[in-house]
Image (cartoon, rainbow, N blue to C red; front, side, top):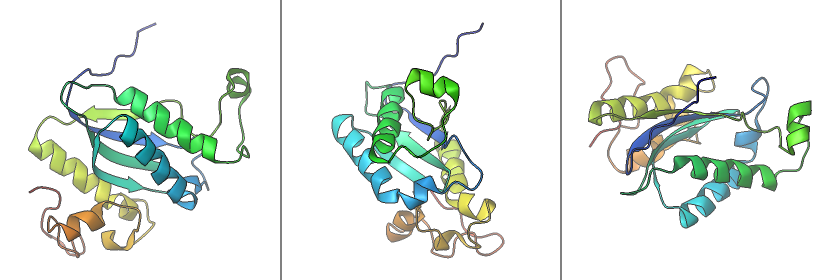
Length: 176
């Protein structure tokens, strides 16, 4: 069996997709957004990193982390975020036999997808993907209508116009 290896780039910026175990009809993340935010805050205090962009959808999230110089350990951060969020919820989710045997909750998929951002263009494209995601999945018709997104921070900072992606050929969002 091939051993799966994650990149060990210190101080890098990474794009992540993290999914709930049950996707269909699941609204765990948005219904418990304050608990998810608390989990992120707690982990950031113990293991600093910056969240450069994020969107939380009902059953998955996308984000970009930048790790401090000399630090490549996003694996621990994700384990702690997921565990902290899971512990804050009552144990009502369906669990498979293998999860029960391992003492695992059934909230999150075990793995996540990560991508090392190679340059500023790659970074900007992933920021745009993150901000567009609620529209892509049909949750809203305009990016600005989704409340669980860093898009609103980008607008406040002047990095994106509020009507970004509302019109064809609208301005790029995400870069400075």
